[in-house]
Image 1 (tube, rainbow, N blue to C red):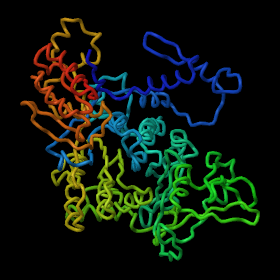
Image 2: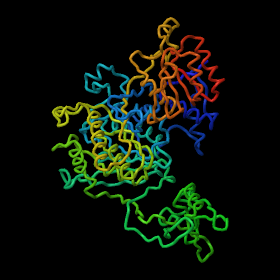
Image 3: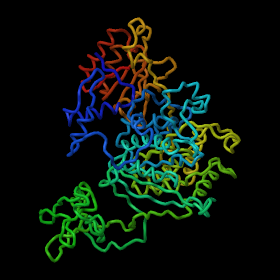
Length: 621
């Protein structure tokens, strides 16, 4: 029997339950709904004390927290539909612009971009009392009531006002942020970081939930940015700043760079070229003891093959500044100097080969380059207008320097509250300046622009429409200014309901006569492009992969990343076509269940592939 694609996001409840089952088999039991966890037993397994009911503990609680956790874990059957007419260089670009509720989009990106994003920057609603927040659980209300009461907009998105007088003022904001950050963490690389812009209203709560989601030990910094020169009016003190919270996926893997200072002389030389003696690779000062970070205490191979450990100047065990992988690489590449103390122990220094060294970024960003006014100037320059189409635009210089700090190269950069798309604009400039191939993923709710706003009067209807035009104009401007040969294109996708009929997901709810009515599982209004996008997501392939189209035996075939995936959604698949496809030995191939010429062709297809291209994995939808 042919294997069908799930066509829905991962079910993390099931995955986590399986994870627990493998490690604590006595804490799970089988039910009619599958594996379930006995949490009382699990709590006891994870404790040295006897667990008797609820105990007081240090953590942040709010009304709706459990629902927020469940919301993050629930799978979605929604999909992303490509919009070629709004895209630029669709088949070849690796940049993505996605319109839709970012919670659903983050769920859809879980497999395709799991552990692949080097840097995330977001500028979420600050919860000032004038913002809208996403309300993610309306199970007790009808759609009509939601729209009539203003809790959903015409795009069916969950937006609600959150005034300071609301009884769940902080709780609703936390419930919005928690599941999104939880899903975002999964997308980071091991050495990846997230930067979150926020102000005084929620910075304290945001830090608490980030400590919980990312781990308190993975906190990097709380950076202060001067946002407004002169400050905004308030009762007692002028407020001129906001914050950037920075967290890592794994603090031991992260090595943020810094900014360049005056060059130094590379006055030494070895077989790899000139170098200068750098600082110790032992961590010094606060947090430098072995017990402060036990995993950072390990041996490296010394000059005579002996084991060298990080020993402090007082003779006690210390820790390295770099993680195990990076330390061993430096030693292997000959980028360290082994010096000796009077007591015979080694002290290890790094070799500096860059004559433009960098110093670590300070936790204060007080420069006119990072002011909101700078972002406004950029918008006016790009659109050639006297007044900005966006309010409170973050300057591209801010995200640009965060990419420098993170060490982005040919990596993914994500912003799922993308607004004016300053992050994407920054990514373009970064690639133009450094000849890198960083790829951006922008996600934005299709919010209407305010009535009588400058942008609305100029003919723009929604934030994504305006942001997409900004990217087109920014690309043209940068190309004229720099002449850089980079990827200026982007693929636009829109969040929508699944391409599949309901019977695809719940066949048990239909009798055979009803199922027979759905000879084709696919909704009538969906295109081959739509199906390909959902298949790529379901198979865990990035939507940014190169897509080619070719006619083989009178059928249109999509080829994704060479032979990584072949897809054909035509309706006359026969043995002759399968034989032609098999010659190219694709790694994966997918067809519509109803796309075969007849039942015999369907049965023979898999057998022919097994015979002619045994490594090919075939699925149907």
